[in-house]
Structures are given as C-alpha cells and as structure tokens.
Image (tube, rainbow, N blue to C red; front, side):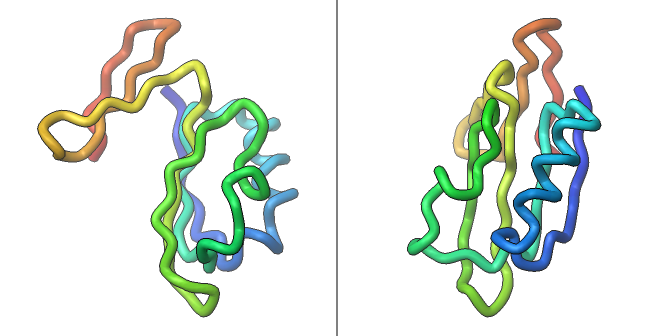
Length: 97
C-alpha cells in the first residue's frame, strides 16, 4: 500500500496539485490536513476521480482533514476505533495508525 500525507493549506486552491500528485505517484491513500473547507464545498468538487473522500471539516479559516482512498481499497471500522485499510488486489490489511 502506498500512502502519503500533505499539509495542503487550502485545498480548493491546490486541487490541481493533488490530482497531479495522485496521478504521478499512484497512491492508494492520501491524507490531507489544513484543508480549510466547510459544508458549502461538496465532495464532488474536491474528490479526485477514482478515489473516495472521507473528510472532517473545521471551517474556511483553518483546520480540517481528509483521506482520499483509492476505489480499489476498502475502509473498515472495527468497533468504532481507527480504521483498517484493505487493499482488494492483494488482500493486504494495515492498521489505520
């Protein structure tokens, strides 16, 4: 499983950069912080094609985080704890922390 984290500082202004990063690196999972989003921006505006978006907004002034998970992977919650990521193609299971 290939994954990365980026402190994006305002995702709407860098969504093209995220698309290029995902295309060039073929990441399975990308974690983003400091997205500066709120409920007025739908997932469809920020989620790259071929990825599912899991996000926790704060406000447009700061904060917020998200995970973009490639559609070929599953996100499983175990008893409300941190998620496990399962890569379908190889049946790899990684603890989410």
